[in-house]
Image (cartoon, rainbow, N blue to C red; front, top):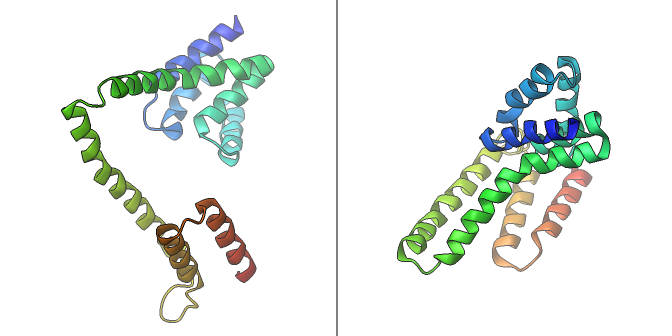
Length: 179
């Protein structure tokens, strides 16, 4: 019975939870603490903090943790599968539609018009990361090492075929050694 409850609770969260893991927290707390009573508010807060520290999406980490707490390894598998199932099904249906209609003029035009939007979103995310915290040494009186690392890494990604993961690791190493 617990596995069905886990599956149903996390399936509902996966279906109706829009906006990412943090937007789902109130829904998860309602199901886990208020509705089923699987943990206290304090335990839930600790679990959220733990889920933020581990790699991966917060909502999936929370589902895995609560599933394990409530139903062991099988519980963690059930909760994790239930929360990702709606997204996987939606992705499958969208991709099936796109591949079926990839030569359709409207689909081609829509996808082509999304490219600059996506590029703009990536550019805005990059600009948001360019702040005084990330570039603490930037400016007239700073060493500008962080700016140089950023510029060199960008140049290598843009004009060479060096693997970006290697560049990220090298940038981290240089930053660690300098700072």
